[in-house]
Image (cartoon, rainbow, N blue to C red; front, side, top):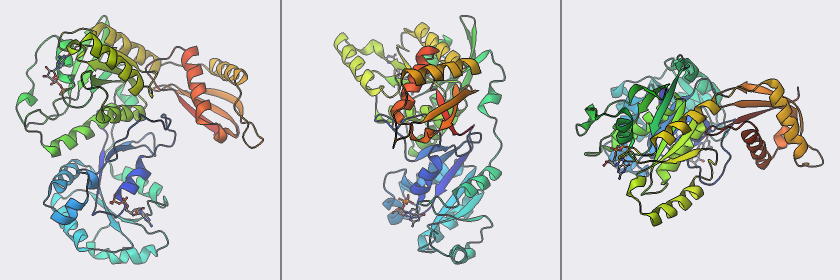
Length: 442
Ligand code: GDP
Ligand code: GDP
């Protein structure tokens, strides 16, 4: 499981600015295209790709921070904050270095002392300020871990992240989880009620009694081993973390974090969508999270049984529009209830897994880049053409290609997409992103 860090603080201290600074990916696998939605309150920090951690901005969970202001720590927003902070491995208590300590900060501090979590005091907005004076203002809070930063200027962010790593529990990397290379780890994710439990139960061919059938209980995701058509799988069902009856907002929050955490450590994510409801914002946000994780993806369009022919036609059109940002992901129509489409689903899972683990040789990568370049050279920018000198493979999961050259920074997004499509066709890769890393010089 990914460790979890919670941002806590009164409104306007810069939590969401800090959240964005921490969750922005450097080697983005996803081009900024319409259709990719990201949740602004939950994300994964990948500033060190080898040590990702989940991040929750507790301030904005209920939408308006104003609640916290008006209700002190007693309102629904506070309830969510409490739930998230209670789950966190580390809390970042964010304060405003310009305004100094306020009564609301004091109140939050009292509460933080009660929950007794490892906490860093993060003094934000110290750009153009004497950081020591700002620290002195908060010294009565008695924190030993104090970090003066500027989120908007990205000052002190890398140092803060280093200190965060030092405090987080060690978790296994995704690669360590691949201990049994024969067993494919498949995680079913999607918003509540799309049919995750029904599908997993159908695959297992039995109605298992699950603890979460009791209203209001929570549990971690279920893992089951399965052999099917001679292949071994470990299925992870993230459903049931929250139950239909008595949906507690605080618990719901928790399930989104759990989804982020389980996507990270899987090999193939199956994102389930309810055909009768189309692709909702929440679905797109789950898809965005899977894209960020770089893992293989299959879309399962469930409840296909409940649609008339006319509705199916309409749904097909909608899907091709709404899933245009993941043209490489296979979308399989299924009915978890009737068990139809499962053979196709597993075939797609298998293809995605095989593609994600594709091992390029240096020779084939070099050759492919050469041909791609010659067929369609990149556009000249300000009198200079970007030059690709040589290329080599950079690993799997997702398949990665490292290209060395000059002025590669000026490669337009459209050219990167061209390269990706070229590789996808040439090596018949489906269901996985392909990562290109560009290095200046030799
Ligand atoms: P939140 O309510 O805690 O999420 O705060 P926001 O992230 O929305 O920031 C509130 C305001 O503070 C915005 O106008 C930001 O531009 C500004 N802000 C955030 N971080 C910094 C910073 O490091 N320095 C300065 N000068 N302003 C900042
Ligand atoms: P989860 O919250 O994602 O685990 O969703 P569930 O598996 O609990 O399913 C939610 C509801 O959708 C239940 O009432 C299921 O019976 C129903 N459902 C699940 N799969 C299908 C399906 O393929 N077709 C139809 N018509 N209903 C389904």
